[in-house]
Amino acid sequence: MPATHVISLGLSRRLADLLVEEKLLKPDQLKEALEAQKKGGEKLGSLLLEKGYIEEEKLLQFLAEKTGISYVSLADIGEISEEAVAAVPEIVARSKMLMPFNKTKDRLTVAIADPLDVMVLDDLKMQLGCDVVGCLASEAEILAAHEKYYKAASSQEALEDIVKQSAVDEAAADGVEHVEEKAQQDTEAGLEKEAEDAPVIKMVNLIILGAVKAKASDIHIEAYSKELRIRYRIDGVLHEQPSPPKKFHGAICARIKIMSNLNIAEKRVPQDGRMRLKLEGKEIDMRVSVLPCAPGEKIVTRILDSSGLKVNMTQLGFEPEAMAVFKKAMESPYGVALVTGPTGSGKSTTLYSALSNLNTPDCNIMTAEDPVEYQLMGINQVQINNQVGLTFPAALRSFLRQDPDVIMVGEIRDQETATIAINAALTGHLVFSTLHTNDTSQTITRLGMMGVEPFLVSSAMLMIEAQRLLRGICPKCKEPYEVEKDWLLKLGVPEVQLKAAIGEKNKITLYKGKGCENCATTGYRGRQGLYEVMEVTDAIRQLILDRASAKMIKEQSIKQGMLTLRMCAVRKLLSGATTVEEMMRVTAAD
Image (cartoon, rainbow, N blue to C red; front, side, top):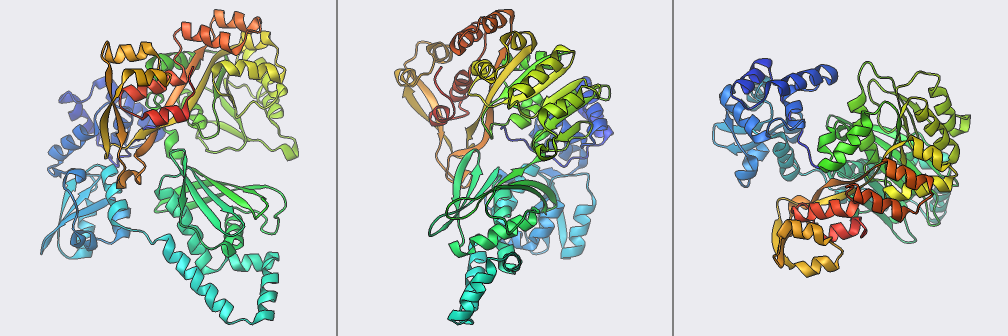
């Protein structure tokens, strides 16, 4: 997804009016942002940037001028001295959202994110006993400086603590006692005691903290015959991390189970749980899945970041043509709109963003989800529980007695759910749902395989959207190179798109990431969405009724102007946003 900056700017109404007077902001844009502020309670400066009404640098320069402080770009000042960093403790810098960058004998200069928070500098003067000068800087740059200069305790230190403690324990026990201790650890009480040991707690905390700081979406903890492996999924790709010895696998699993309220003694069946942690003042929700494997249990923890859900639809990365079709479906009074794609392709973000746009006081929105990943104010969310009979079909039947305007079904998994959802659409409700298919045209085939009648699909369907997430090139180490036009044609890049980009030239300039500290030497930083949106027109409806193949439906959709996933990826490639390798990894040729 595209990276967004979170700015701690409590912009006053007077300063906002000055932005309009100086023609940096339009009156209707300010009015819209103020209305959004009343609904969500966000800071005005953050909303203006989120909606794209003003550039971050222009806003910061304007604020610096009006508040009488200097504006500084931390990215442009080079390396910050150790003396300056050491002057402010990490906990103070992070909690106050500031970064020291220049230190003299009797003066410290710090970058601050909010020029209107006058108490920050006064508090710092009191704590340090020297003159403190503040400069305005982007919060994104301040956070990046925190990660670069304030080094957290490494996983290796925790591993050393664990190994040391293990060595002491083993030296203190003879052979018989060692066997008895080993047997005790297999009991629930023994596992719980081991999981509460300080080094194990520290190790698990560091694993989670490292994943959050790396902006990972998942943590994988896997046991093999002789070793334990820990991997983070960052920007959709797994990366190995430093791992503890295999013998601590049981203690780590037990600790995570305790944190997520699971049965630590049960190792025979899969378990699912949740936990909520507070890291550096930010609440993190985590979904935990435990699966018994031959060498030992595998744990996958999904990190749920609700900040990504407050994304304006226009910032998700839709091409203009696709966005127009999606908005048309959202504005329809009834019908079915499906969002498809594999796990981790951003379907939840797209759906929640769409629901947030529809979430007004005069609209009753109800969702059936398994699980409810994020809780949204103003939306009635139901957690599916198959064990007590609260299934998707049961929830949908109940919804229809609750007078809904918009219904969201977490996933269509069977014929019964699909039929009830379609019937709900045919009786005057707007229904959103997801399905696991490769592209838009195959969704029709998938519904047919479930046993849903073509006339129901044809009459109720408004739109089908398929999506993927594509890694973007790291802006810090991005470099150009030239390739032959014929080479791209052999890779399946449509000639029409190439001709529109370079005309009759034989060479084209592409980009790749060299690899640097900012991107952990991968060459990629952040992700962007690819969206294939098929509008179900009369021509498509007739093909559905005729039970036409997915290929014929896709061809008709392209004739109507639909951009396929590969076409969207090619646009990103030719604009310099991603690489050939990433395009080939994520999308298939049409």
